[in-house]
Every structure is written in C-alpha cells, then in structure tokens.
Length: 409
Image (cartoon, rainbow, N blue to C red; front, side, top):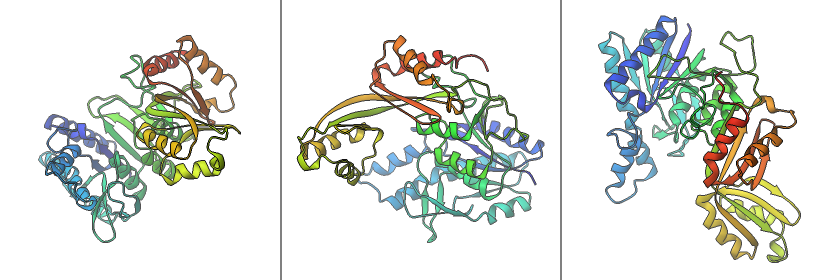
C-alpha cells in the first residue's frame, strides 16, 4: 500500500472553508491511490481562540508560571481540538477516521517538557487504522513519555511529527501544507520578485532553516533526509505544485527539474551581536583560547561565525545574550568591542561547492549597494556575511538580483 503523510498547519484548519479545502487535498491523495495519514496543528495563530500562544497566555493570566509538565498538558490541547473538528468534517463527507494524540500514535519522548526529543515511534495504532480503512488524524507537536506524561516537541513540532511518522510507517512521500505556494528563493516580504522553487535538495532546505528562513523545522528535514523520503511543501489554498525537497538521485520517479544556477536561495537571521575580543594583556592569565571559550560555554551561550587569530577573537551571539556576555567579559578584564543590531545574510546552493568567484560576486553585490561587511564565514554550500541590520532588506534584494534568482524558473 502506498502511504502518504499529509500535515496541515494552523492556518489550513483555521475555519470551515479552509477545512473543506483540507478534505479536498485528502480526497485527491486517495484518488491517486495513496492512503493518507493526516497530521494537524492547532487552529489558527496567536490571538485565535485555540491557538497554542492563546492557550499559553491564558495559563499565564492567573499571575504565576505553570510548571513545565502542566504547560505541555495545556499546549497539547490545541492540536487535539483541531483533530476532532477536522475528523468531524471528514465524517460528514462520508469518511471513517480516528483521532489519535501524539502518544496514542506511538510517539515516545524524553521528559524535556517544552522541547522533547523523540526516542522512538510505535505505530501499531496507526497501522491498525489503515488496515481497517480508517483515516488516522494525528495531533502534531506532541508525544508521550514512557510514564504516560504528555510532552510537546517545541516550535514547529508538527513538522517533526509528520516526518517521524512518515519514517515509522515507511511513507512514500510527506506533504507539508501551509498558506504559501512552496519554498521561495528569498523572503517574499523583503524581495518582491522572490520565486517559488520547484525542487530543492535536503541539505539546501536544511541550510535555509538553519540560517533563518522560516520554511520547515530543520529536525523534520533531518528525519526525512536520513529516511530518503521526499517532502513536498504546498499551499492548502491553491492547486500549485509546490516545492519538492529531495536528493540528487535522478532515478527517482519524482520530478527533478533543479535549475543550473549556482545559488538556490538567500536567508537571513537578525538580532545578532558581534564581539571582537583583543588578547593584548588586559585579561592577564585569562587570555587563552581554551579559557575564554570554556567561560562562554559554561554560561550556555552559543557562538557563531567564529574567527580566531593569535591576538583577536571574533564571533557573534544572539543579541538576547549580548548584555550577559558583556558582563562576563568585563568581569574577567577582557578588552573587547560589541556591535549590536547585526544580521547574518547567507547565500545557499549545492552547486557553489568548489566553484571559484562566488564570494567575489557576493562581495561585489553588497559593495554596489554600499553595504559594509563586518565579517564572513563559509562552508561548501553556504557563504554568510554579517552586516548592520538596517541594511538587511537592501542586502537581500541586492544579492537576489546579483545572482539572478528573480528569473522565472
């Protein structure tokens, strides 16, 4: 039997009109001889009655912070409500279906409430539904500990639910439905001529998510990649074909029409602070690389874009940790400068691997728009430039134009 996992985001189930569209997508999968396993998120977004953020604010309105276990119990309700409402919609159309919580679907996690790690999946209840020709409707974003406590998987956790279930039941493909037509070459809120990509590779989409693009949860991509299950990002609201996330194997029968451009997409992540620490004797015995970075690690501060020289150490941190790190460095006597309000802009593309001139073209594109580069870093498939946040929109548009990503694919 050809199994397909279809995950529908909160905006896809926000009202009855959209839920009817969801039913159409499920019916279409069945017409293509797939058996659908459905995963849903909580209805709507912050401010909507059953959205996760709304439930969190309701709990906090009492004036005290709920403990993590009880907060997870509350946050899991939004997805359960979505499941029941969607199940009733399907039943009205004549389909048998059964609602399963994450735990009932067999998702077993550790006890890290709020950001639990999936330990294993025992899909017997899902497979039993399929055997009885009952469509499973599974609550995303949640699981259950071995002791039976409900847990949640962190922001974007419904994507993880879809991938981990797809892996467990050996699905042929995983569809992620949202309110956009697919993965775009840049943030359309910044770049007016950003294009929907027909195909993108696993590692490229993983890089996009890691470097700030809000497309799909990186963990969901990692799971699909290790299982070699294609992901398809589509809109619930249109009939557009969406973006296929796959690998290099041209022998797969899924469409493969990746264009020949060096750069696939541009992503950006703001609220960064750059630190430049001088080893000039000011901190005496603390001026050792191992001591400096162990001090930072002990405070659970993550650093990025690391450049190490004998007399200078440069890196960035999330600005939420900027003041904390400044106080630590001052207490040890380090001579440093901190530059807040920075953005890390990254170009991404498998085909830049080993190709000369890509960095030069990126620098040229930013220079033509009079944008100063504070720092750079690169890997085989990415190049990042740190700039002042006030230049973010100009920088992303300049690079999108420089690498001709606005051309219709």
